[in-house]
Length: 331
View 1 (cartoon, rainbow, N blue to C red):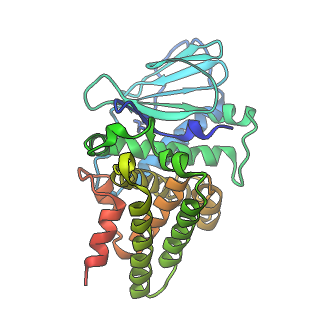
View 2: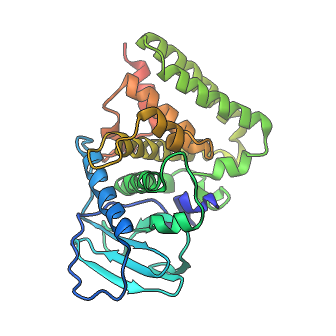
């Protein structure tokens, strides 16, 4: 399975693949043109409820009622309007989306809509994942709920962080696509770089596990120094803009994983997974540097500044690294 379907991307700095949120669904269609199975429908309603519950208390701009949701199975597309109304359209294996027709395969993304302040969200329903043979330590329904929550969290961040990336000096010289996987794509074959990433991920995780707050801060400061030294060494020339861009993507992916784990473990409507299981099966799978390093940064911030989510889900464009710098500067 290609991981491209779990990616949010800025293509030519004009379109973002991130995710979106949604209102409670109510079926107002008297005679649908096709049907979504009961398990897929139940999954969608559960996912929406879990996300709403996970968002409570974050203090950010939780835009749950400005998003069109497009989900599909092997033969039917369900569109949920921002009002909550549903419409069903049969398809022939190619799903009609605002960006054009696309195969009915595993995918999950969102993008700004034509309406100011709006967005649309696209995701394959769990039955598609199951038919593709997707496997996980947790059930496919639970894993895809995590994907749904991760992607939805991005749409709340879209207005600030999208503009933040576009405004980075030199971003136009970075090789397209400018996305959360670009550092791994560029430096994935560099063994020295790879060893540095792995070491920093473990260093931040180790810092977050310490009982003594002073130890958390000391170890986090050391790990942050290693990260900055790696960036200084490798992000040169046309790659100089990568430092700011990557700080933003670490924020988006780290907070997205953090929010997904919140939905999977703490939402009353969610599966209430045991935290270690959710972390192992969803949060730390080792597939993406940006997700693992970003989540490790978020784990440290949970210890040093538990109020950090209100910054990344609000009107600020502060990165997790900015927030960690601020937390480490406190006496």
